[in-house]
Length: 214
Image (tube, rainbow, N blue to C red):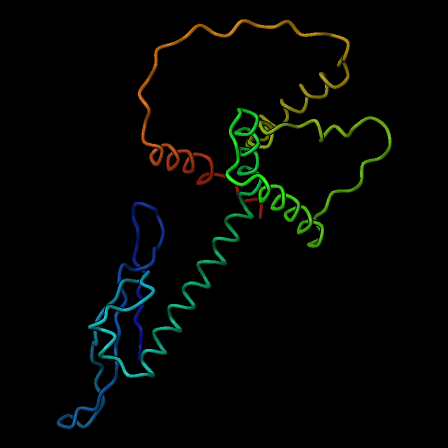
């Protein structure tokens, strides 16, 4: 069986996208024409894990295996793409997670979060991307960076941040006690927006235009 997959031009995204559906075709012998003809068995959604029952009944065992090979390959490619995306955006994701913790948010599974963080560091070491050990003395300056720095993407912004950090690093005086500032005056309360819309917009702003260092 042939599974016809035709990528479509997505003008909104400016690239090609997967098709909405794929066609299932088989060759059958046409006795009158004395040659094989391609017959359309049916179509199925590209992202379907299982075929509709009425369509699956039309397939031979070999054709059903062809479908499962297609579905398994698609799932494998999806997993690989997801892993690459997560690795590419690990820094901003971790930075946002740090900001959430600093703001008082609680992780859904603190124990698993700790294990995941350790596993990520171990994986970096095993892959040859571990950090060099710090030399004795004052802490390394890069350890003074915060989540805000990790979210900077423009070279000019990074340079300004590092210059300001260096000045603060040299002039820091631990004996100075900062004054307690009064909380800001209460402002107008705005309505709570749908969380799904907020997350989708934040992801688009944070990651779609993120420079790919690879």
